[in-house]
Image (tube, helix red, strand yellow):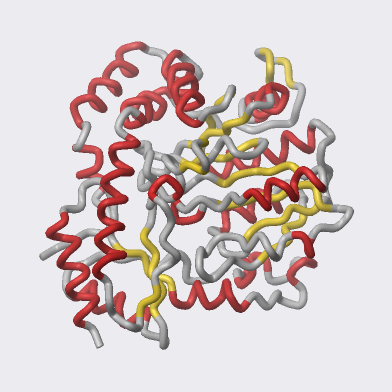
Length: 373
């Protein structure tokens, strides 16, 4: 049996006729940027997330970059200020901070949840700290009431990296609406994926939204008038139209992911494998299903599953603080020692999950895992 990690072709085919009709509509309109499709998707996505504003942009990294850049332009932050961020994350979160001359302060995760440990944050706050950036990694909610309280107590901005958590909630509110601003990625493999790169920022701050919209359009709020030194980072009409189609099915797709996760949690029994703490369904959109493989056997399990037709992916083999690009940064000299993060990156393996995998395929994956000694 062949079980791909995620077949994007099959995901697209689920709503193929609607997607093709949407693309055709854009092609025949003759308007390909900053038009009705963008406006429609931004409105619908803001309504879905529960914020007043949504600003489309080129990709998820840019979404985060523009949030920090806008805060600098609005004199809320300045280069050299510190941003507390989880050490266990994809490098894009850190890149958005350093791109703006800000200093990332990496905090270890809770080994049970794999998300930032809220008990380790306060000790890292200094008079230069201006924000906490949480990452809803793997689709798991990272927000806690304690994090919200710390932001209020120390007057810190709360920024969400919601690149992997479309469809996740916390106490009835969507991730992406819990903080001051959130960056979203619509990379094709995400729960809400485009047919190419795409991203967005959500916020309730009208001034921030206006600055981000300008920054992502060369810095212009009015044609040929440039308030900021910006860049071209716009969401195109075809991607907006495709995303608007798929948004209607997002919650249904997440429920399918949750059903797969339930089977994994209830049937994986191999003693070498540790599963992250099980969260209520509303707190996990299951973009990924990470497992931790002990005893240095992660790569062996990966190879074994591949040999038996099952696709898996490591998220991620090298943590950000161990990457060459950050090897000489002042905040990482001498190189940080983050043993919990490093252990996760040495042991993590993501199993197939998504809206198109069948339960028969899931049963096959679990059978293989449980049979390996």
